[in-house]
Image (cartoon, rainbow, N blue to C red):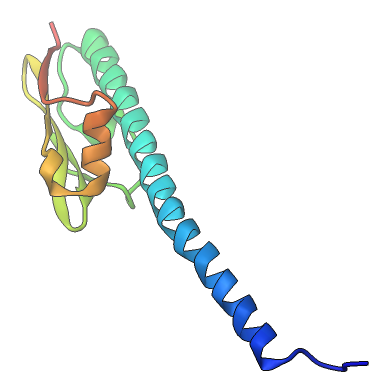
Length: 129
C-alpha cells in the first residue's frame, strides 16, 4: 500500500493542469474585454439619451458632468467631452457642441475598441435639434 504519489503521477497532473490553463486564460481575458465593451456601449447609449433629454428641456448643454455621472475608472470627463481609454490610448470619444453630439471610435487603438466596432459602435454625428 502506497502512502504518497509517485513523481511521475505528480508531473502528469501538473501537465494536465497546464493544458487546461492554456485554454482557460485566453478565454477569460477575452470574456473580460467583451464585458467591458458591453459596459462602455451601455454607458454611451445612456449618456446620449441623457444629453438629448437635457437639451430638450434646457435648450443647451453647458457641461456633460451636469447631465450624467459616469464611472471614473472607465471614463475621462471634461466640460464638453468624455473619452474612454484602452491601453492608455483614447479609443472612444464623445463630444458635444451647440447642435450635435459627435462620437469618434478609433478601432485600432485597443482590443476593447475592436470589440466595440464589432458591436456596431461607429463614428457618427447625432443631432440635438
